[in-house]
View: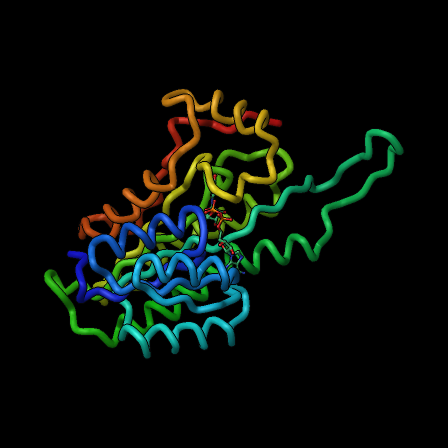
Length: 260
Ligand code: NAD
């Protein structure tokens, strides 16, 4: 799909990090971009810079998602592009023993639920609602109606210690990619998923600088964290290259997560 001023795009998590970079890349090609994010203040700032709009939304809440889609479509028309980046990182082993007290506790079930609700259900919800809207559009060249890109993580497949809920949520995103591509194979709607390694975004801000340095050193080549613009480049390729479909692609400098 050629991205230009005729294309309306929605980017979830567009107020920050990988979503922000993707929104900027789409806007640079002229697309009308709607940012879907919880962070209204930051989203409004980015939207103003790229000539887009900000729609405050909690992707895990269906009513909130419906309202955001209605707002975006009223402003820009039916979207042909959806990029899903909204997500949270959660840490916690299934069961852990406290080093000092010896106490054994398990990962709180509500934390697991929340992670699945935001990262997996939030993504599914946006994908399903966007695809339903795209089905009302006329097809472009090759009958293409729309293109979607989702964000998983290498954690979906690498088995990181202490990331059971996060890995499960991202594994779900990987697992739904090909079945969804097949669901829409007669409708001209494509979907692909990226598995980022470690990118320098506010998601990592909680980690001490030293920990970030050792993560960067663990990347075989290049020995650094990924730049959000490098992520956005792949998003644009997946949108613009009509032969990309049903794929899950690592973007990680060949890192395989070491156990922590
Ligand atoms: P980020 O924290 O910079 O951006 C995430 C954005 O999602 C934020 O603006 C936040 O407000 C928004 N968000 C969170 N919960 C939301 C909700 N319920 N509804 C709407 N918006 C919500 O993080 P990032 O690094 O840009 O991460 C983007 C995606 O990439 C996430 O799904 C993350 O899991 C994934 N990822 C990131 C990395 C990395 O190294 N940065 C690695 C692997 C996967």
